[in-house]
Image 1 (cartoon, rainbow, N blue to C red):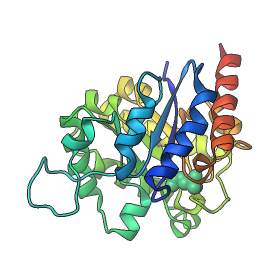
Image 2: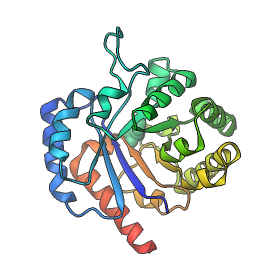
Image 3: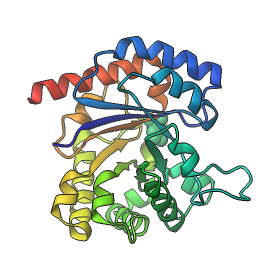
Image 4: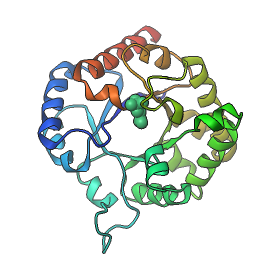
Length: 257
Ligand code: PGA
């Protein structure tokens, strides 16, 4: 059984004070989360503030990016070793990093290897653009991103990672994929994993959907067989909205048992 994961990607939102306020609003509602994993990924500067607040709770902490060297003269960068002192997860290869900051899948691959070395669980993001989607290139684009980003990574390491399928046309647009659409594409991603890393790895690796997921559509996604949760941007910045997403997800999982 793959444990469902709801991961909040706050992106470049919230000052440390705002981050503290948001976590303080969310926490009391989540004292009894069972059966699913919840993860918060605030901006770097709020990592330690949020880590303090999450101490003794089941909620996990992650970063939104990292560099691939351990330390040294890399002004402005942050290393997996630094993140690993406070976090369990790191988001890598988000489409905003790829398109706005020129990150190639090769760079993402180096970052994944560095994160794994420090026992961080990478959340590898992959996704096609609208143009690629409309030109029936989704499978080709996702397969290439997957293959290049996961080059030379062992099956065991891949099964400890999370993959997030985030169609670029759905991110921040309010135009989410349908549950069926996302399920079919994630099924295809699992097939590709199984071809490269074997069936057991494909069956244990969690694959999330991301792109305009919110409290109104989360049930549709987490009810699908192939979808193991969501990576949530905008909706995770509103305490009520995110808490409702968690509650809806727990309800779906409780009904499946
Ligand atoms: P969104 O972002 O939920 O605001 O569409 C998701 C993401 O980019 O991870």
